[in-house]
Structures are given as C-alpha cells and as structure tokens.
Image 1 (tube, rainbow, N blue to C red):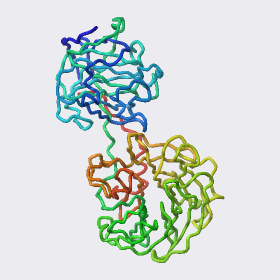
Image 2 (image 1 turned 135 degrees about the horizontal axis):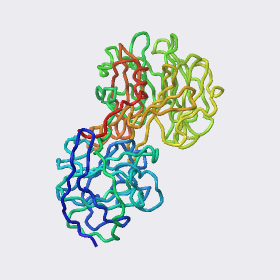
Image 3 (image 1 turned 90 degrees about the vertical axis):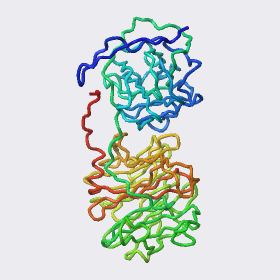
Image 4 (image 1 turned 135 degrees about the vertical axis):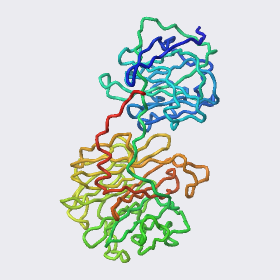
Length: 527
C-alpha cells in the first residue's frame, strides 16, 4: 500500500535550450496495476477530456478517461507535439499521475518517446489554454531510458500542486518507431489517495529532458468569411462568361423558405444560381435555370462555350446506380439528361470532374470497393463521352478508410482530391490529397486540414438550437476576381448542412500547394 506524500523537487533552467534536473521530479511507484479508488480524471468524477491532434476516427479524446484499458480504448496523438489532458470538476491538490500505451498487454508500440507532464490553474482549462499558463512537472524520455514494460501502465508520484487541469504532451522518437504515441487511460490522484500494488524496483534510471512545446494547429491559408443561412450541402461555384454562378443541389424534403421552387426538395432538383454581386451577396442571387430533376450530388465544369453538369440519379441512403450529364450554353436552357456511367460495383454517392491536357478526368464515390467510401477515377476525351470505358484500373483512393464529399482539381501537374475525413465521435473535416497518376496518392500532413469545423457554432439550419457544429465537408472552389472562393457546408451530418463560404488570396494552385509545402522547423524547448 502506498500513501502519496508531498516532497520537494527542483528543476534548474540553465539556458534557452538546456535544462538539468537537480532532484528527480518524478518517482515511479507502480508498474502495471489498476485504477485507484479516487481517480480525479474519470468522467464519473466530472473530469472533461481535451486534446490537440487526435489520430484517425477510432483513437479520439473520448477514450482518454473512459475507464477502460487496452488498444480499443486508447487515445493516440495525430502528430508530434500532440497532447491530451483532463479538466477536473474543481480545483484541487494532485500528487500522482498514471498512464500507459496498453495496460491490457496486447500492444507494445507507440510508447517510446517523450512525455511532458504539465498542470495549470487556469479556469475552464482546455485545448485552447495558452502555453504560458501551463507549468511543467517533468518531461520523461522513454526512448532514452525505457522503463520496465514501457507500454504498460506506470504510476508516478510528484510534489503536490494545486491544479484545475493536467495535460501530457507526447513526442515520438523517430529512431524508436514511426508512429505517434498513445495513452489508453490517464489517471490523476491527490496526495491522500492510497494505492494498492507492487512497489516499483528502484533500478530504473529515468532520463528527464527539456519541456516540450505542443504542436499548435497549422495556420490555415483559407479565411472563413461567413454563413449563408441555407441547409445546402453540395454546391459548385463556377465562372462562366465572366460571371459567378453556383450549382445548388436541393434535396431531403427541407422545404426551406428560400428554395428556388416548390418542388426543389421533394423532387431532388438542381438549380443554377447567378451571383451578380459576387460571393459577398449570396442573398441577392438569381435562379436562372432548373438543371435537373430527380438527380442529386451534382458537379459542374465549364468546357469551351458550354457548362456541363454531372449528377447521380436520385437515391436514398443506399446510393444511386447511375450518373447523368446535361449541358447548357446560357444557364437557363438545359439539354435532356444522358446517362454517362453505370456503376460497375456498389452504389454511387458523389461525383467530381476536372480537366487536364488529355481530356476530362472524373471521380465517383462508391461503396463497391474497399471500405465505404472509396474514390474511383477515370478519364474521357470530352464531357459528352461515356465514362465506363474510361475507368482506370486500380485508380482509387480511400480503400482502407472512410472518405466522402469529394472535389477534384488538376493544377501544376498534380491531381488534387478534397475529401471528408472521419475523426471519430461523429466529427468530420475536409482534407486534401494529391497524385501524379491517380493511383499513388500523397496526403497532406494530418495537422493541415483543408477545412475544419467550429465546435462552438450553434443555431444550425433545421437542427435544434443547442446542437453544435461537428462537420466541415463538401468543399468546392473556383477562381474569381483575383482570389480563390471556397464553398462548403457545416452542421452535424444530420438532415441538412449549414452553407458557408471562405476565400484565399491567391490562385487555386497556390492554395493547394501550400498544404504540401515542407514544414518549417520550429523549436520544441521552452525559453
């Protein structure tokens, strides 16, 4: 039995990047073991978890204090300098912390690196609490000196401090492993807690290093400009004869006050809207033509003196089976739809097109290959040609993960796909990937979302007032009057969207290349 006792420790700063430990700030008192009876970090105790840079859709922050050990309940950082922590129900004294990669003993990866343990006394602490309000207890290097059973749970004692929250910044060791670190359960205890377990042997000599800096969110080159008061999800901006237009896909029986016709949502209609005063004045748009009925999930491309629209046959949540095409020379009168694609496998849930030096490249989103949903690609010589003969074998993206809401662009010799990434917990953001040949795809770094949602946004169209935004999807863009204009939707992936717009001061090529520029080196040590 171990009663946690307060004791003194000193860390001496020797310079901007040099630190020495005068007395060990942590004492390992248990290896393995289980939860103590008064764990302050549990959700049941009122603790709220927070993080920076979660990995994927399964290892998210809700796993940090769910009361379960093991890989399925592990939080994993999405990049070096990620952190995870908990805000306590109230400010109080803490004197011990426990964490591990997988206390169930199945996985031994994602544990060798540095762990920087910090606390704060800030009110309402969380992921947005400034770095200068955090104080470092210790930074321990598992790669330089691994503890016994490094992937298992380890309980450390430290001098008693008063805190409102604790966080652990993680940083993998590149030589020890290629993956970011994980924590299956974060536990925090006060000085009066009694913990049962076998005493840790004192033969291990830990290595303490300089404190870490969190890897702060990458400053996006896209500036969000506003909300357009519409439940629309799929829209395509395009420039035709010098004027800005927006292809709008109306569906889902929204019965929205500003919809272009009485049957717009009941018949899954697509309409072309003219924005004579630009994107700043969406409220002054003029609907100039109904493009298709009984079709949805459409996209458009300008080709010489015509505008071509491609869309999926109206469908339920099970998807459609065909893609149709129509064209116009004046945006008001449209040709009869012609089928251009029969789904070769599964159903179709979205389409996108772009132009390259060989013709038109197309994409369709399907559940027919890999894990739903997968992007499949092909090429035709011109927009009027059927797609099936042009399907490129093995030209696919997202076979092993969820993708959705795509857009496709060809710039500077690269094919760029915007797609929806599932973050877990019903959260989604738009990311970007690129390829030279439509087969070998290179994702932008995980810390560089193309568009992220605003978790504080409420008042979503067609949703209860208290529902918060957890989605940023279906981004499409065009170049208009010296800047790139981006339209996307927010909301929560239920019922409808929350149409928004954004800009970048530059061309689409310049914008998309920024997401793949090499990251500038940034210091990790505190001054």
